Image (cartoon, rainbow, N blue to C red; front, side, top):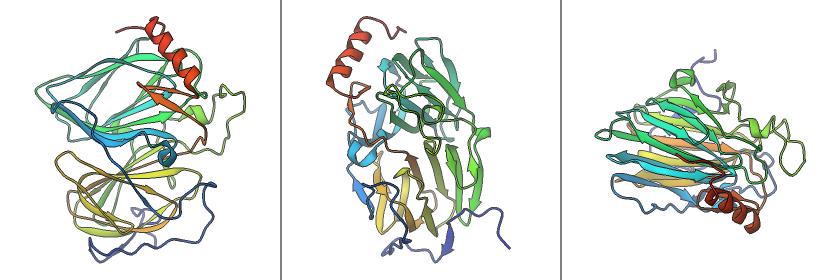
Length: 324
């Protein structure tokens, strides 16, 4: 009988963090440029103070499309001042162990408070000014931020800011793992927050979006105990990135460790892989449908080319994106 708490594609085995051998099912690639083996992604730490530290994958769109950046952040005693976004979607997820909430505003009236475990999804569309401030600067917020490319495909008009509460996220267990689907869909589980740009909105290019495109997905895996699993990454058109956020794990033959605020990341192609983790490890798996289009990403603006980028900068300087 099938275990109702199991995960499609996850099977158990003996615990080991070394010499994991990969196994790949023979199936067609999700898209023409899809890699067939995992690739280590360079990780960098942006120039922030110790009170607002972070590390992640930036400026590698050839490998991470549609993601412009994926980073784990930590703030204690600091807030990020108002700043613009345009041509992109920004997802901010607070880890459940954060010790304070965070207020998130945009210049067009969006104003929400994220509790630990909540997700904020901001479709910047034509542009907005945004800030997020911890409610208690003496406490710590920690989480992950995804910036998703919308260049040339975003809706016209005001930004769209929505919140997914922790109580709306599917949670289940598989062996020594606790899994949380933060957004998107995984197997037969999904979060009721449609990634509308790929399903309902008409791209600026005039083409109709495909109803087959899958929503942007964030899956959190936490090891309660040392455990090893067989893990199937779906072949459904999405590109996947695995990021270790804490502790140590091994995935597809690569040892991953998060130490002193650093993280490590892999580009993970579709197929069947082995992964193992020590108790306390946390792995994040993000997936999204590649746009396979040129993009210029600079200063939180995503544009199709330099001309569009200059136009976005001009709109911001003229105050057309609003102020906070």
